[in-house]
Amino acid sequence: MANTPLTPDNSAVVLIDHEVGFSNLIGSHTIDENLNGTLALAKTAKLFDVPLVVTSGPEDFPAGPLYPELAAVLGDHPINYRAPVFDAFDDDGFTAAVEATGRKKLVMAGIQTDVCLALTALTALRKGYEVYAVADASAATTKETHDYAMQRMIQAGAVPTNWLAVGSELLRGWVDQPLAPGFGQIVYEHLPSWKHLHTHTESVRAYAAK
Image (tube, rainbow, N blue to C red; front, top):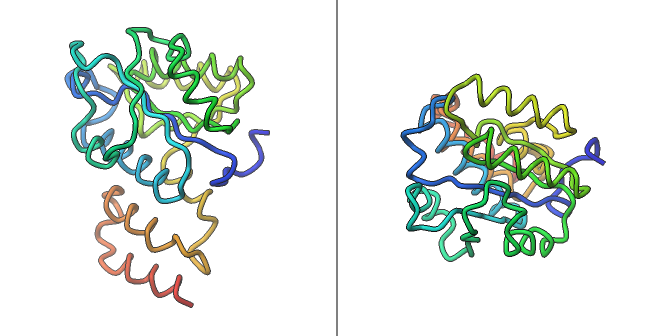
């Protein structure tokens, strides 16, 4: 159920169309905001060893390849280059990749929020998945279209969230958690408002070592 906590054993992260060609279309967030949220979510998935499904349109399409910063985080992680369909579940390869995770809780983010993310998330809900829509790792042409798309998904049963909330739910706390230093580093790198806390990472390491 969607009111049970996210754990590394019950969830998967799905990233949809974080491509360089969309950079000029994003208006709901700055590029830096979207990039920070996307990278943080991808790094969180890798830190907690949560299955990660990444999908993108054909590389020779106008939207082009993935953000290079995201590609660097992913390394040799497989990418589902799907046919030019807006609902990623219309692509057999994507559907198979999601099913292969064996997880029912899908933490989803994408561009555009109102098109590829929303249509894919709505199908996921119809298929019986629990969808967590990550607002700050997604973006749309305007704030209005982003917000309305989030509302549409929420009305259909999706849970609105952000990357910090996802990571915090997976971590559960700073004390006695071996992955606390790693998550603290992600927070320090991708949450600009925390960057003034120069001792944050060191403090987390001290707590984790207790």
